[in-house]
Image 1 (spheres, rainbow, N blue to C red):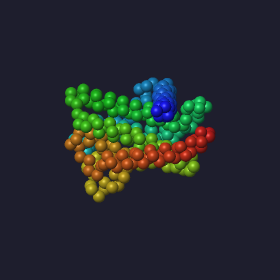
Image 2: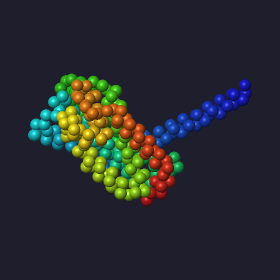
Image 3: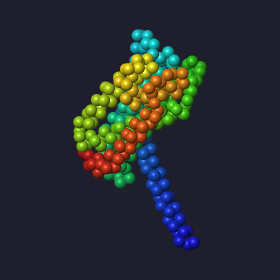
Image 4: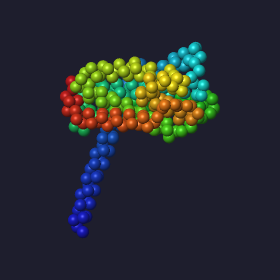
Length: 276
């Protein structure tokens, strides 16, 4: 009777407060992402376009190199699309993870506001990089489709899942390295070195997995980003072979990295707030 009605009313109010709180945090993250974007655009020489220039410049350089040496690893796909998958996903991963290592220190002034927490700035930076690199992929894909007057995207759902999971992977690794790096500073240095060097040569930018001899594949397939790149290529052309590449492995790495990253973060949030 009346007790049940009161219980349901109290429960409804509690749920409403939780939903309103989450909606407010979402608006804060979106506002921080827009703020970060406009600040980056104002600092660059080419404004908004300058934000997209770096990965595009690398893609054009590698495309010219491919034409020069006549590589034969991308016969199943347009070379520009093949390179775009590798370069864009690598830059997406690097930018999110590296921004996580420095994003808290840069956002210290905003933590004066009680509703803005370090996690909000990290999520905003991640959202911004995801938007930018998704725009790069879409721009290149649409341009290639108009140029050759054909559209090939065999599995758009797989491409979307792959992109989202890669964002989660980068965020989790970045947050984990950030928190651990506060305890052990050398971790930040090693993470930056690994992102800038090791991943460059093991993420499938310069090779296709199916062209590697079987015994050599374990040397690179430990890298979850290689799985992300090759799955994206396979989603565009289902005939593109991906031996020893697994979406399950990518999902496992992403959920583990996010899980550990969030555990580390909430256990050390006070430490991040006191960062100078």
